[in-house]
Image (cartoon, rainbow, N blue to C red):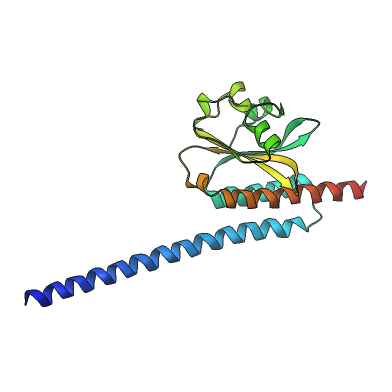
Amino acid sequence: MTVKKSAKTKKGIAASDNTLKKKSMLDALIRENKILTTINNIAIDIGRPLHLEELLNTAQEEILNLLKINKSIIYLVKNNRLEAITYRGINEDFVSQVKSINIGNGPAGKAVNTKKIVIIDDILSSHCEIMNISEIKGVKGCIFIPLKSKERVMGVLTLCLERPNPIIKEINLLESISNHVGTLIENALLFKEKEQ
């Protein structure tokens, strides 16, 4: 009887393992679906003749919902400066202090100059244009994502992390978002030129 009992136990463990694998696969599929939906929504916006600020607000909302992040700023590159266009979860007093920053050697400037994502795990111990001016309550780190259209950097999406976030490891997803939003910016600027 002992043998039969252990065989039942092994069968129960195997069934439990299969259930966990199925749940894990289902969770992964749900996450992938959310990612594709967000990128698709941004891609749809690319073709819409809307004003730039409206498009960026929509894209920013989609991105923050997907990544489960509450605080961010989108900057556009203008005359060797970064100009804040939209922001979420950050008070206006703070944003007014960082509304326009030089493209220098800090993380935002590095993102523009290298055309690569810059991740700052500990914002207080790094040289950061944003943190030198003031402190964003509760922010532990930041991700500076260059918003590219082809090889041209149109702006920077700054994601403010209040706690460790696994999104840091998903560089391909962040680059895909970067390319879509960069194209969105370029198309909106071209549309604005044609309107004038």
